[in-house]
Length: 351
Image (cartoon, rainbow, N blue to C red):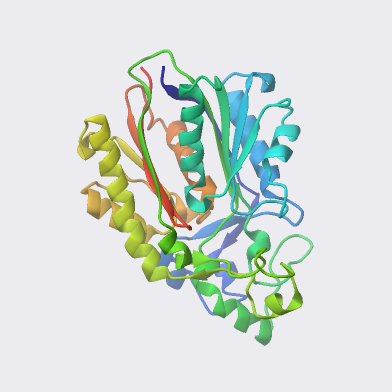
């Protein structure tokens, strides 16, 4: 039997950071950010809140939504680009925090494609009879990643002096994109042969590794962390925005067409494409390449920014809550992320 999604949940921090707020620490405004990214605001985690904390809230919500107890989950998959610690990953923290018992917990690092890979892995575990009920969580907290300097005790931004503002301006192109959040799904063995995961295709191309990467604080450096790397800003991402755009608007639609061909359906048969929320311009390009209207390729990036591994489950959860996912609905998940990793997964809501 196919793997089916039986519960969903999400978690975002209470603090809302608007584009106007960012104008106090860098040379920008709402029009500049929104016209280039589609982002109006994002959520910002409080100091001391990690990806595992949001993952646990979203995971608990998904378990409850599925009508399960924690001890009925027999595998956990966590995806994040921003783990609480360099090692270990957040899987063990989430497993313990949710009281799941000594089940296998898998951490994956496919960045913006992390949840897509996790969903595919959950389907593989279920299809191979290695698991019956899998909790898949995508969670990212970028707050500690920003170059903006310290915040006030209440979490609000401290207006930047000239030196800090210069640093913020230098990293403006990527730092305005991201937000904090988590999303989760319970994936179980289904009983309806017409519903569940229909087809999936995943890809990786290491020749595109440098489209977006963090050049420092890695273990090819000895020591892996030192003042020189920090002083040179090597702990912050380097991003080729144009290259990312060109690859994302080509490869995500290619993957969507691929799973449709695999399943013997047409792109027009898809009811909703749940695409990674990286940039509204990329979403517009995906719509154009697939010939689909905005209603079929929805966006919530204006409210949350790019939450990396959390974008797919957050958007899917909101669509489900809005009544957009009904019995028989054909959903296509697709993402493109650093590495580069991309793909698509076709899913039909059981009748």
